Image 1 (cartoon, rainbow, N blue to C red):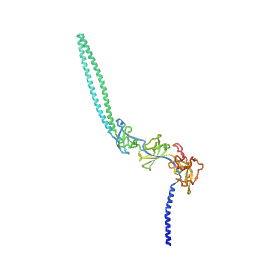
Image 2 (cartoon, rainbow, N blue to C red):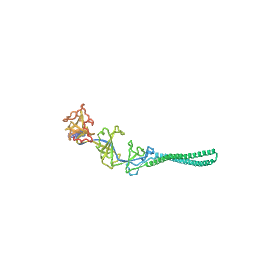
Image 3 (spheres, helix red, strand yellow):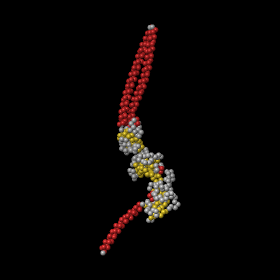
Image 4 (cartoon, rainbow, N blue to C red):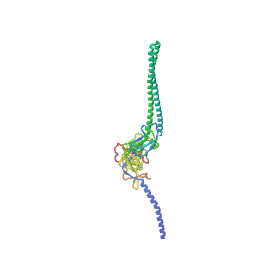
Length: 455
């Protein structure tokens, strides 16, 4: 009998343990879940920030480009044949890149052939001029001899008949006029020869100049560093960096840059909704994607007045420049950054998560823990950011609020604010969570407005 009682007690104890353990585990799990759905009212500095990704750039740099007279080569698509690795530290005069000479070399061959032809034309013109002027001089000499003979005949004809004398006068006059014409022809041919030589000489000089220019340009295709620094590739219009095989032209001659690494800025783009919150001088905390633990203080140095359509962006964005205030030798242009721009700040105010706010009839409430239950407490809200909202009235620092309404939300006690400034909307019964557009918020002050008072 005693053994039967002991066996029965053991079975009952085992059943209690089997039933009680899961119940205790479920109770503990429910309690843990409840704890995660409760938030304490915080008090401290409240900030509103605009976060955007950006890229480090150097506002001051020396550009490495094609030769300045590259357009005279009449080759408008030149390719990079070799390029030192990005990040290479070079000295002044070190070779940075080589440009493919194939296209320009063909033009040089054409110009050299044209120069040979121009030189041949020049020599031919010089020979022709020499021959023509030599013949003209011979004609003058012949005319002088003929005139002298006619003069002797005229002098001897004075003893002849008048008709013979007359014929001698006519022959002398013809010889004199022929000599004068020969002299005029010589002067004319001399001027013609000079004009011809100027023409062919000018063409020869032009061809020589073309060859020299091409040769100088080709010599400049071995691009050297104009000063010491670190080589950073230039980005093309499509966002890709210059590389071996990339095309350059006289209108976009940049190959690489030598940036001043002591002064860097983060270039970011902010959407048109958030850009109205930004102003020059606002503080920024910049972090690097490569090293999230590194925080770099900065300030907004410029905000674009005109938006632009960026690749892979659905809406227009505005360029914002953030000057990095502290130099760092590990920073490099092209590094990706996260920019937290502080647009508004209030010191020593109470705030709760946005999830804790519920609106009813346009009036904000929170469900505040009170003993074993909760109270529906009306609150007066202030500024809000992406996560939290300022509580101006209705809560205390020791209060705890629910992040979601309790199951018996319609039965809990409602506590209204004395002299509430909350104005109910025309449509009561709204039980939605607040949004930055629906919560009454004090407007953020401008960069020139006085600091906000404590809440």
